[in-house]
Amino acid sequence: MTENIKWWQKAVVYQVYPRSYQDSNNDGIGDLKGIEQRLDYIKKLGADVIWLNPIYASPDKDNGYDISDYEDINAKFGSMADFDRLLEKAHDKGLKILMDLVVNHTSDQHQWFIESRSSKNNDKRDFYIWRDPVDDGEPNNWGSFFSGSAWKFDEKTGQYYLHLFVEEQPDLNWVNPEVRQSVFDMMNFWVDKGIDGFRMDVISLISKPDGLPDGEVPEGGEYGNSDKAVANGPHVHDYLKEMRQKVLNRADMMTVGEASGVDIDNAIKYANTDASELNMVFQFEHMGLDNNPNPALGKWYDQKVSLIKLKENMSKWQNDLAGKAWNSLYWDNHDQPRAVSRYGDDRPEYRVVSAKMVATLLHFMQGTPYIYQGEEIGMTNAYNLQREDFDDVEIKNAFKYLIDKDQLTDEATMLKYVHAKGRDNARTPMQWDDSQNAGFTTGSPWLKLNDNYGTINAKKALADPNSIFYYYQKLIRLRHELPIITTGEYQLLDPDDDQVYTYRRLGNREQLLVINNFTDQVLIRDYHVPDNAEILISNYDDDTGTHLRPYEAKVYRFTK
Image (cartoon, rainbow, N blue to C red; front, side):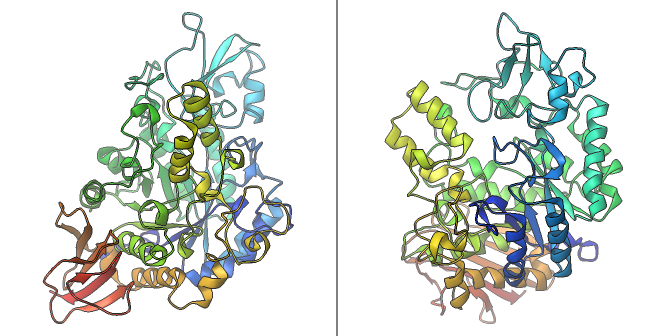
């Protein structure tokens, strides 16, 4: 396999959430010029690719994932000239740019939808999914991923339109070939600019099941399960093959599809080695392992994931995709809480060591790693945010439907769940230094900052040779230098150990032993490490052998 390695298989991606990264004009919102100012920081970290969350024109009902013009820039972020300069500067530094592609839906302010809803006879009517009422109600029982029904009644034409997310995000009708061609034309606009690839938002949802049948309603729930009812529809692979032919084959690009509801079999179809569709997918199985046992509460919960379940799931994806498809590796992103808070221990005495442990576990696996902004300095969940501080529509709807409407839990418990799992944990502004507003802006920040920026910030990290930042830098360098991390076989050890996650990576002449203590306890584990083993990386300064200190991580390298 070594001789066939693609550039994106050895690459490390750094995700930038533009509105929270760096504000250059002090309006409180991060922007493209701000990202340009920080390119040297990303280059110093060692990342190869920058994935930008949506920067297109948008009314911002869902923070840019409701796009009103795919070929224009959100004025809050700057201009097309600013983007062109950012792309040029990134390329000059050897950094690639990955754009977020959002084509399951548009904004209701997009010209296509404005025309579509104007009358039943409009040429764009069939660009979206319209249906007549059924028994004076919604056409089926699907629920929105953001709470409530997935259907919105339009008084003017007397029909409902489908929106799997907020009502201002109507779903495109991919069955219509004109929709597909319009999307491909738009993608080619960006390819012609010289971008290096696409991260494809909820791409597994673009093909709806024929006939739009009702979904299964979970116990205690109100709506059909959208994930199971809608994901991986009958024509999704046909659409992606068409996209490959009309767009993606035009350049040597990186593609990753966000694929909710995907399983191993589907992932192999999306990201197969024949390169007929995508390079890799984001799957979410490991993200759901710490969901609430009450299905009606979904992801809202505050208990730590079972390490045994985490091992089982991550090992399944490592083993079952090997040689068949490519993994994407991630702990957090703009839709997930902070990695150190969720999988490590963000108490001051353990934050640094556990953040390094969590990173070690992921970065020695096979796949392309994604680092979310601030992860590299150990930013934590924002426990200081209260209900009135939240911006995220998913959080607001969760309070609305689970507290104000359904009374499924009390507000204090819900706040605790949001502090554990809410998306705004990841969206608080980047913590650059300990000055006003963490060096993000001198204006009024669009979202309240995490109040720990005085102690957790990039300036401090860069001044400390033992910081999380430099640990990530070393992890990235090792991935670039050691082929075994990209090509080696994965082998889990002790699957029933609920305290330590240890695995091997096996190459032709050498192997790696990756040991991760997931507890704040001193443990004893003997993995029979050979005398000739060298430590590649560790989050402690010395090696105490079979004694594992709290959250200790270490990687041995030795010849077979």
